[in-house]
Length: 108
Image (cartoon, rainbow, N blue to C red):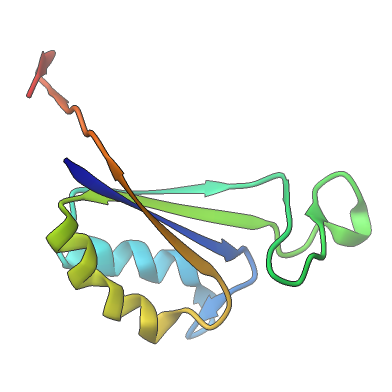
């Protein structure tokens, strides 16, 4: 079994004037995590309940961002202190998943 870490952010969230998701992906890679994917949402809301969407020009800012990382539970939990330093507004969801990988056309 593996652990999936889903990190919910806003596109406007920054770390030293750069997108926060860039720093999270960089640190995940530096930590040797199996991989990270960044997905940009077209609509959503968070703790503030303010809807962010691409449908309305005046609300097209700060769209939802989701960073997904899957690795062993031990490695994901060891990475959480990095997020404590980086995230001021957002949420992290951890769920147990079964990970199937393919390399060279073969399942491993």
